[in-house]
Length: 178
Ligand code: PRP
Image (cartoon, rainbow, N blue to C red; front, side, top):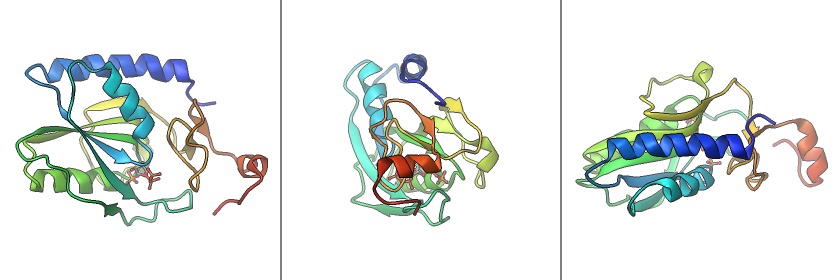
């Protein structure tokens, strides 16, 4: 196990306090990057004061593998963020391509500013320099699953963040490394 649920929860409390200190006038407009950030966003939102507006965008670059394809695919309609201060919430920032693309898109859509909260960051993998305002944990270059994060669509429901091992596929009994 890399990060247990209690450790994650404690860090979420700290991040929520830091976020609340920034958005004193009104809560940020939260934009969750699905699918992976759903669990983290739900937890963070519960801990923030007020009732933040909430939107979802879908971006994917991994498909069924453990290595980013390098091509970020954004699907779905544009969130109504014009005039809003946006908090973009990610589960993990790896190369930085996804956040870079979404941040630019949200600013084009008229967001006043875009800050980024991510549960995990892999600094050693960065290809694009992106400002990260709230980082839960910096982790080594390992493929992780659980707490919303998947391998080929599986393991998102695991309560802890764990490093993916080939035996996960064997234990799961369905499918294999894609
Ligand atoms: C993951 C993660 C980020 C992105 C980070 O998404 O949720 O959105 O990759 O990688 P990057 O910094 O190299 O762009 P994924 O493609 O696994 O889609 P998912 O969240 O739907 O599982």
